[in-house]
Amino acid sequence: MAQRKIAVKICVGTACFVQGGADLLLYEDFLEPSLLERCVIEGTGCLGGCKVQDAKSGAPFVEVDGNVHANVTVDRLRQLIKEAIDA
Image (cartoon, rainbow, N blue to C red; front, side, top):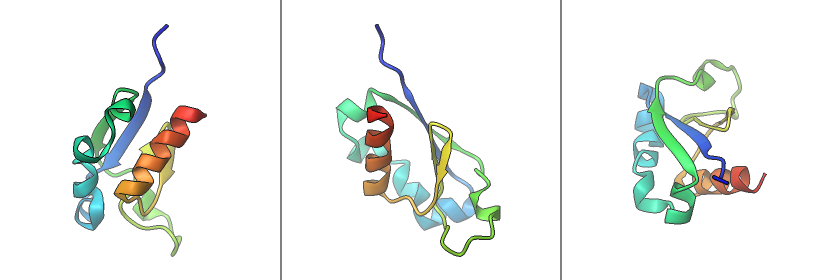
């Protein structure tokens, strides 16, 4: 039986791209092969997070299995993917 793939969308809107999204798009350089094989990762237009009036939220935004996360770093992306796999 094939394992379920985790859907990951990295915002490439201007704010997200310049505030770290560009680094996240280099996921093949920092994610372990065991995580990569469990994901379908793509760049996408605005995820809408920047339109939310919440001072604690900021770019870059990433959606992992339908849940949008703010201020995602390389380490945070790795953690979010691991959590989604284990769920």
